[in-house]
Image (cartoon, rainbow, N blue to C red):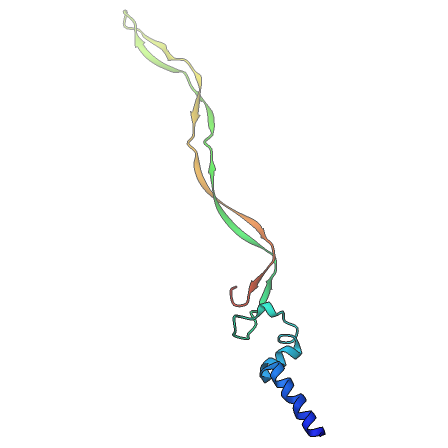
Length: 126
């Protein structure tokens, strides 16, 4: 009688748990504390994730540098001319003045450090 009762309980456990692997999974809580949603579709393995810590990354970006305006002194221009008597006379051709020169703009590559926060990523993707 005792043997029949024990075999009846054992058969009931096997029907309830299905197979030995399913019995182990259900008794240990899906692989030793791993959440059930991490199992792949009917494969029975765990997708593990790793923590990628935050870090600084060197970022290179192209920046437009606008042109500058520079003031330059233009010296007066004198020339030797001859008068009606044949004497050399120094004559002012153009007066001295300030001239504004516009320098063209250009692009420049600038490096800086950018903070990338930490995040979870699937194992093998980093």
